[in-house]
Length: 144
Image (cartoon, rainbow, N blue to C red; front, side):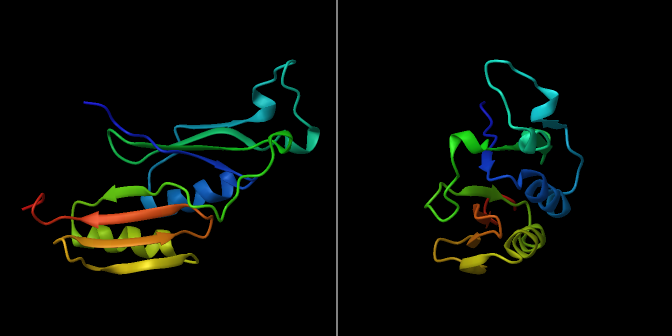
């Protein structure tokens, strides 16, 4: 079966954002690669961008990895207020859902606070302080 692994682009704060995500999910980074670590004469990077992240990955579970990078100035800015696709997390318990919701939504904008949904799951929807949109879901029918 295929596994989805979200990959998000940032405007120079990927390392800060992923340090925040690591504080919520736990674990260790599998990779932290900076632009200066990957020189490419066909793709020159400005000196001020050498320490930006070209690739960072944080394993979330045995089958899921959250990844991202900074967008170089020459490619423009990511619109952090656009309606991006949401990252949906299926929690294994109400307690895990609460922990993820409380951690990830801190400093963000809540669209739907965590609570029982009309469709029977424990659910929340929000944008974190980095502009990334999340949905947290615990379906007790799947975790009896």
